[in-house]
Image 1 (cartoon, protein in one colour):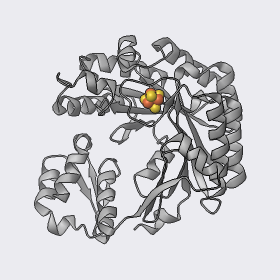
Image 2 (cartoon, protein in one colour):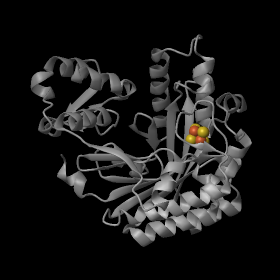
Image 3 (cartoon, helix red, strand yellow):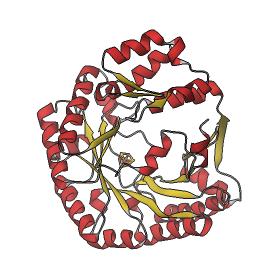
Length: 379
Ligand code: SF4
């Protein structure tokens, strides 16, 4: 295990399990339209949970994700951040992010978020096409998205991220590129471009049960086109779905990809330290009830063996432009150089991987098939 990563400052993730309504493609755990009583219980339960982990950290990133954290009012966000500061050491200059739905952003809301200490805002824009937003079941319009970005900039945020979704059925590559152009004109510091996937049990999966969704080849080609279009505009493709202006990568998300410790609070949140991974009860009612009665909300945990650590390291590393260290893989018993020579050579010769001293890293073409590459090495 990389000792360096273990000694780095932790990431703190807070899962806000509420949304105003449910999107048609979403399989995340979140409750639509929660009662104000439940939201208040959740905020108090979070404060109790933080007290259980006072020995963790220090932290240099805090991330309020969900769900939709912007369904909370700013007073509730203040309360959560005050509990964070009371219980943990937060490094100066920490990256403090909140995810927001564009429909929730007003000039006052944006200004108060900034005053609360949040310095990075990630907006779930998803598209600038009203038909696509309707298809996805989003509750905001393209106009809301543009207005929210203006508000956030006017409030003084210097680090904003936009989430977009591609590979929408019946959306041509040109239509997608026009969405991307609109995003680039805004010059967000960060762009996450996610492929739309059919998650079992969602209304979207139901709709496409018998019909054609799209082929993998189409998806790979759109990702390559996206990467090239964003590179022309100065964005670095640093992880399969993530692009940023130089130096503006998400510091928080990067911790998930190299085994840096992170603490997850809130229903269904996952944590990781050393070789230990643990996760919370996913039901918000069970989570709050456990903490109200002085019990831990942890549902279960596991200690990862060398083999699992190595596999994760490979899977996560091959999704990033930085790639993965061959000697660290060897440390977990995965000796690619001596036992997977043929696959390694084939990947390098076909332009999927690069090798540079101790590291293998995917090219853009390789990133588009990162999971398949990792599986090929583990077969
Ligand atoms: S806002 Fe996000 S978490 Fe909530 S339903 Fe939509 S996709 Fe899921």
